[in-house]
Length: 172
Image (cartoon, rainbow, N blue to C red; front, side):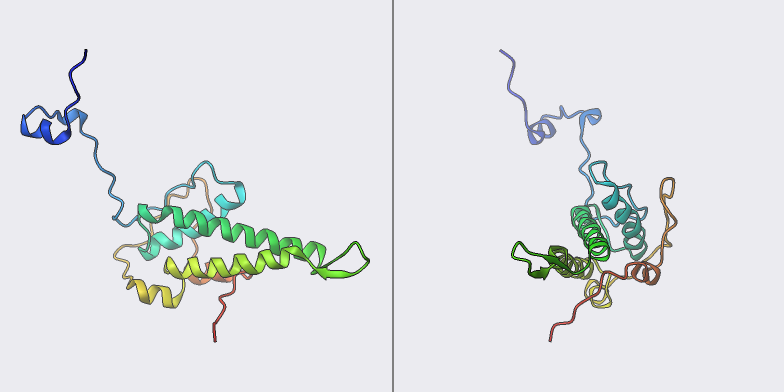
């Protein structure tokens, strides 16, 4: 029978810890300077949104490795909003019913929901003026881009101008 496995604490206490077997803990709190590539499991539309959003977030100094899942959610939401807007543009804002009536197109509701979710996520990640004020961002570095497979980075103004289907809603 094999001897029991020692914990990391016991290895340090007995001075049997080996440097070549230490696993470095990922530093999830450090700001990302270079935008990472989109994960492989993302669809083409979501990956395209990733390539548009990540350089802006990295340039703001607003993103860490711990935030990447939220960025995936944002990119998926932006891709959904873009697809719903394209569907409405192609098919119109109303559809027929079985009783020869007219009802609103289902994509209108999808678009509305996606825009609301995107607005919340954009604010949470610091991509709105209020969101940046809440995060107190001061980028300490220039924008560095790994543009081997993507378009050049956009400024925040250009990014928001290139997304006309994302409109922040105000609550009264």
